[in-house]
Structure formats: C-alpha cells, structure tokens
Length: 472
Ligand code: AMP
Ligand code: MG
Image (cartoon, rainbow, N blue to C red; front, side, top):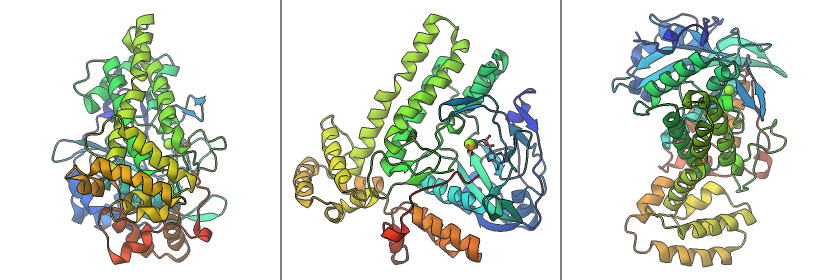
C-alpha cells in the first residue's frame, strides 16, 4: 500500500502523456533498498511480497498510481532536440515521506511510451545495476542524487548489439524536472505552461523563492554545490546534456558515468563524447552553459526586457564564484581544513599538479593522507614530501583535521572495473554476489573491512576500463 499524491499529474494537458508500464514476462527481484524504503515510509514487507514485485516490474499498478511519461526537450552535445521526453521510463506517482518530503517513484526500462521514437523503451541489466550502485554510493557520501529503490530482471531479452537480459530500475527523485523540461515550453513559445512549470518547481523545490529570477539563482546554487561534490570524488557524469540536468540539483542519469582511477583532469570515458565536451575538468563550464539555457527559458517570465536579460546573465555568472567557494571547501576538507583561506587554494592546486604528473590514483591519494600511504601513489616522491611539509605546517594547529579528512575522503569508490565485473557476473552466470558485495561496501564508504579491501584497489593493467557506454 502506497499513498500517492501526484502533483505533476495534476498539471494541465501538455506536460505529459498518460502511459502505463508494459508488463514483463517473468519478473525477479535483484535488489531492494530497504533503508530507502524506510526513508520513504513504504512498507518493506509489502515491497518484498509478490504484489510488491509486480509493481516494481510494472506488471500491476498500485492503487493511487497515475502513470505518466513526462515531456521534455534538451540540448544534447550542444545541439537542440525540441522533443525528447520519457522514452523508456514512466512516473508512477509521488509519495510524501513521513517527514513531508515529496519523491517521484519512476520505473526506468518499463516499456515504450509516445516519446520512445525508435527505441524499445527497455533497459538492459548492465545500466540498471550501474545506476543502482553509483547513485546509492553518491547518496551515502551525501552528494545530491536520485536514488535506486529496486532493480528487477524482466525474464525478457533486449536487443542491443547482442541479446541481453532486460531489467527495470525503480528510481526515486525529489522530481524529474530538468533544464530540458523548461526548454520544451520555451521552444514552443508556450508562456502559460512555462509559468505553470516555474510555479510548480518553486512550490516543490524552492518554496521561499520569490519568482523566476530567484528560481534561477537557486538552481545555480544547487548545481554549484553538486558539481563541486562530483569534482571532489573524481566523478565524470559523461552526458551533461540539458535533459540530464535536474532543476533540484540532484545528479541524474547515470548512463556512461565513471570515476577516474588515475588523476587526469581532462579524463573522458563516454564512448560518444569524442571531443571531450564532458571531460572531468569541463564539468563546471558545461554547468554554466546549461544554466544559460535555463536562463534564456526564464527571461520571458522575468519581464522579457533588456533588464531581464541582464539580470539572468548576472545570475548565471554568479556560478563561478559559488562553485569556487564550494570547490575550496570540499578540497580543503580533503586536506583536513574546515575553514579554508584563499591561500589554501595554492596548496590544493600544488597537490593536484603532482598527482597529474604520474596520474596518481585520485581516491587513494586522499584516503592515504590519513594513514601515511599517500606518498606511495606519487611518481615524484621528493616533491610530494616537500608538499607534505607545507601541508603539515598548515594543519598542525587544527585539532579536528583527522576527523575532517576521514569524512571527506571515501575509502573506496565505485571503480569501473568492479562495476563491470559485477555486471558481467550477473549477466553471464546469474551470480549477483559481486554486485551485492560492492553495494554493501559502497553504502559504507568510510569503514574498512577485510572483505572490502580488494574493492579499494585500482585496476590491474588488464582490468582497466577505457570506455563506458550509454547502454541504452
Ligand atoms: P539518455 O541518453 O538516457 O539521456 O536518453 C536520451 C533520450 O533518449 C531520452 O528521451 C530517452 O527517453 C530516450 N531513450 C534512450 N534509450 C531509449 C530506449 N531504449 N527506448 C526509448 N527511448 C530511449
Ligand atoms: Mg536522460
């Protein structure tokens, strides 16, 4: 039993199509996120029951669900697509958690919708497991993100380059409204729906925002925070199209995402990102580019005058300073410093420069600062030693430096080769034990346990993953 309250489905015609999920042949539960179920106020026993499974597979609709596919547009790699929308996902509805927070419950991979174009509306197991693992790691680390409530296999095969097992992910988000949702109405000159959408987003995400300009400012702030979190983890989203940028600030759409092992600022994994548009060190610039698209959508609601354009521009241009502040806080914390000074920026940049020289392992360097093992990761250890003298001098009078570092630096991240291993075992042998081991270890990124040690190791040369795929 789920108590739905579907505010998006109450918006007028034109925001979505009413589309039910398509039932699947033989659903089986792969993973159920009980802590998240508790957070949402959902009954864990019911979710684990046969009826719960049928809902998670899209085979039956729970009472109160009003399944819809949301309309959106988006700039993909810089080019505008006026009509994208949920082509392989259906929003079942919204639940209000015991603390009053509202969450979308969406099935991803649930079958075709009017927005599917030539796609099959399905997902294969690989991207479902990847999103489950990575989004839950992000949540455990405190990064704003969509969540994964469940993964089920469908008992059906999907056709990609080969036949692959189909799966459905139950995704939970504070909403699925994207920059591209605004672009959908702006591109059509539909000012009434644009205004309704802005009002809906303000009520839902930024209730004390006073209008469209304020809304834009809040989204800029939320994104500055989120992107700084990504950078601090060596995370590369991989496909920062405007349809994959949430106005809530949550990280969304874990298609070809990856964490870097060795530090390379211009690192790219995605097979379709030929020019490095979405490289690790480009992400703050791309966020500004995307926010500029949102700004031009909102100008009509801000008076549509030269002054409105100037104000929107000023708000977008507030991103770099906000981002730099968050970046400094985050990286300073990684060195044990809670109240950073401007001079700390140079200390951080110096360390990153040394890391880049030999592509030192991003995660192990920072985790290793706590236990004296960081030095081993460097090519030029003398330079590191000199840096460490200055760093020690900076933190020697900070009593909480050790605890600050311990909370700022994960012991392990979702390494690409471990994700690939978990997916391959599940796909080829139906063996989910590597997936479950990784899931448990990533939910607890600050604890060491002997059985998790190997998950912290960088890939051996033959394990290195060079490319990731959207996996649609
Ligand atoms: P994404 O790469 O996940 O951001 O998706 C971009 C667009 O393609 C969205 O409108 C998706 O709904 C659509 N899409 C991706 N894969 C499929 C699929 N297998 N079937 C239908 N639509 C899809
Ligand atoms: Mg997407």
